[in-house]
Length: 272
Image (cartoon, rainbow, N blue to C red):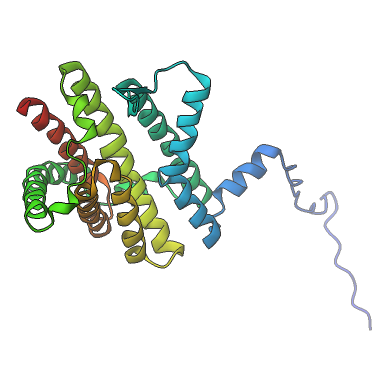
């Protein structure tokens, strides 16, 4: 027997079906935003990012742009083999800006933030104090290591006079040089180090391998100052790298690196 169908009471309307909003049409901006927020990071891309921010490609690009696009004097000295302070400062600061931009873009591509990678969870104030306290320790340590190399390996002193000392003879030149070493040295190089170690830990064999590779590169980039400078700078880079890995923050490294570089300039200037 077929059951009778229940009818709604007279004067009432049957319930209507739920209204489903039509999907929004994809726009170019929404597609780009979705891609940027997608945390996809293959190993080849991580390696490419490390190479691009290591300081060599960007330095060459900025140098060529200045040489081809401006009339800025590049060389000076008796044989025109030494960079002018003007060129050195502009090239270093532009390279710093370009690397900062690349770091920002690369972190967006992997769905990360600068705060997570460079600041971490430690209070920034304590990290700043820690960085300042490390400056005299590093100055004394570098002086001791330099004397030790002169004693046990004098052949490493391949450059009699540091080529950058000529930027420390006049108060104005020394001031400009301090600004450059703080921004392009302390800040840029520690952001580079933190990012590179972060990418190695994620996709390229671990932070230990990254620390070994970048410490060697960091030291060799200072070969113009002599073999002993390569050893000293590599040792400093190793310390700053271990500091970043241990603290998971680049703040103390930035402050100690910038403070150390500024202290070195002031020591040479007043010694003269």
